[in-house]
Length: 108
Picture (cartoon, rainbow, N blue to C red):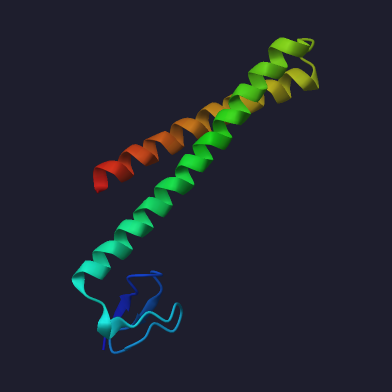
């Protein structure tokens, strides 16, 4: 008896289980084609999550610039620090998400 991960939910289960106790997947009836379909669905879902995060990061980044150039806060004010922080965090968050997306596409 070995501990394996369920192809659908990635939870740890016994290799002797016929049904995953977490997601109720019938493990004995799963073909290789179904496993490939499940893996592809999980990969697309993960990519979509990082695309959504990239979009939110871009909104934060551009929102910081929009506020900076429309309001023109005074130097060294809290507004200026918050604006710069939003721009920096948005930029960093966006770049990290894009790197992860490139890695996931190459991993295919």
